[in-house]
Length: 117
Length: 117
Image 1 (cartoon, rainbow over the protein chains, first blue to last red):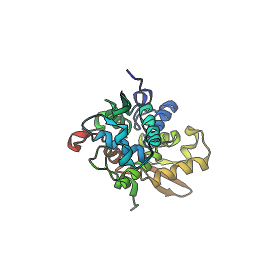
Image 2: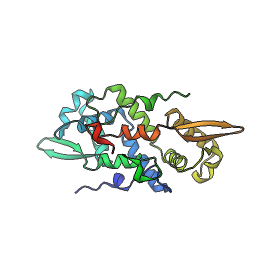
Image 3: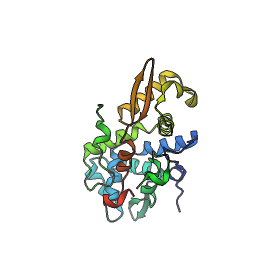
Image 4: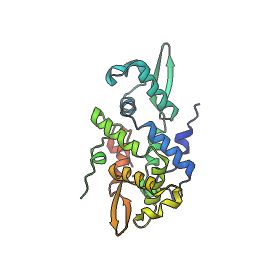
């Protein structure tokens, strides 16, 4: 199993006492999504029924293969995507907890029970 | 009333066909939170009962007043915070829809009805 350090660690924005380390981890996760190409990659992967080949991201994004690979690596490192090698190409899917973790992170409500409904 | 262009515009990450413009707007909103000082400011404001004076952010953040002001401006420009002038100091509170908009943005589910519960 992969390690998911950034996502696993993140306390919600509305937590009563966010530490400096938690703030740093949250900022790094947001930074992973602070690029429109990476937002589009997450969108393309999230809306696919099956893992998405890196080779199928090049045309819709209009970017070179090395650039797409760089963005994919950032998203995997942030724990948002999972990578699976199939022969020559790598395939990508959403990390299982990516949605839940992101939703928890942006939870601005002070009472977490009430926050994400 | 202030204009909230970035937040109002953003389609969820799991939307079926995120446009290039929507991806750019989402990336800009994430970029506003991609700095640990801004994450901590949002946390301090979100956990306060009342609007927070800029003067009360300097000590907990350990940053200079101009730096704090810079970060506050970024967050206001992104539509996450609202600014109110009271005499010499500005006071900040969460924009009313900030939590809902962020939760919608990170919605990775393909069926929005099921997404944020």
